[in-house]
Structure formats: structure tokens, C-alpha cells
Image 1: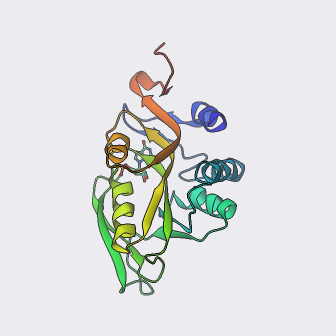
Image 2: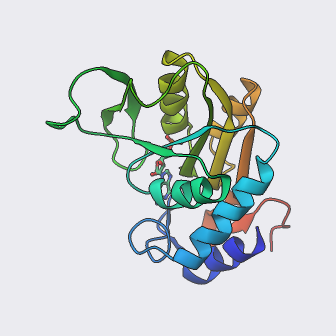
Image 3: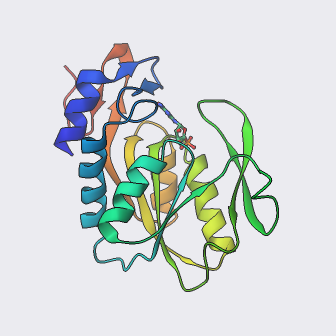
Length: 194
Ligand code: 5GP
């Protein structure tokens, strides 16, 4: 998605060979116009999938997921990372190792939110080693629902998650795929090394 790639190039900060910071439009400050365009793009790509619900993970998945839900006119559920007084029982739970925080967290959604007749689109901000996406997939499967696929804003194609998940037969649509962050340079899939 050209608009997104341009934004990544102009505002993304390469923190290391594996980590990209996009705090000005996705992970801290949010660019609503860009999120709206992202929602439209996901909705178009999954327009044939008969999606009934969207599932994401707090917090950075919520903006792109909500915009997609608005386009597809379906509810959006975000998996919670912490239990709370209002969300403590009747839960589907999966354990996810966080790439950026380097710790394991349980993620949960209420059993009331998804049923076996649902067709669920998973959305997340980044795909790296695939732990977050696998956790979301696991939650939806516990509910007995169908997974239409996954919409990812930024996939880091040099990490294993994308391959693993596609090989497992799950459709993954990534709006930007980065093949390298080496030498402080962002290189998208299909670009030649300069
Ligand atoms: P995975 O579970 O696929 O290894 O990592 C995906 C999760 O880690 C995403 O939900 C995202 O929050 C975070 N993440 C992974 N890589 C990056 C990165 O390069 N930059 C940022 N900002 N977050 C990342």
C-alpha cells in the first residue's frame, strides 16, 4: 500500500536491524486518515470472506481494526492483556510471548463475544515472529469459530511469522512487507538493495 510505505519511509525510525518505531502514526500517536485508508484496504481485500467479527489485540491493533470494522460493518473485539474486575471469568485465554517487551502475557477475550457461527478476521499492527497472531488464532479456535485470515499493517518479512502462518494455511494480507532494516535502511519487498 503506497500511502503506508511512504509514511513508513518518512516517519519510521529504524531502532535496530529488527525493530522499527512508528510512534507518530500507529503505536503512540495515531493518524486517523491513514487508519481510515488502511481500514478500507483491509475491507476490500477481505470483501469476499463473509466476515462477521474482527479480533485484534490491545492496544496498537485497535485503530486499524476499528476502521476495518467500520468499513465491513461488523463489531471489533480486542483481546485484553490484563484481567480486570469486569473481565475475570468466562474467558478464552492464550499465552503470547511479546517480541518487543520480551515477556510472556496471557491474552483473553470473553466467551460471550464469539460463537461457533462467527467468521473472524484477525488484525494486528505488526507481524514479526507470529506469536501475537498465533495467540489470536488460538482464542478464535477455542470459540469454535472460523478464521477468514489475518490483516497485518506492517509485516517484517525477514522474521519467521509470516511464512509459518501462511504455511499453516492461514490467509495473511500485509499492507507493507519490509524485507530488511539493515544499516538503518528500510527496504520493502520487491525493492532492490541499493
Ligand atoms: P510477533 O508476535 O509477530 O513476534 O510480534 C508482533 C507484535 O510485536 C505486534 O503486536 C507488535 O506490537 C510488536 N512488534 C513486533 N515487531 C515490532 C516492531 O518492529 N516495531 C513495533 N513498534 N512493534 C513490533
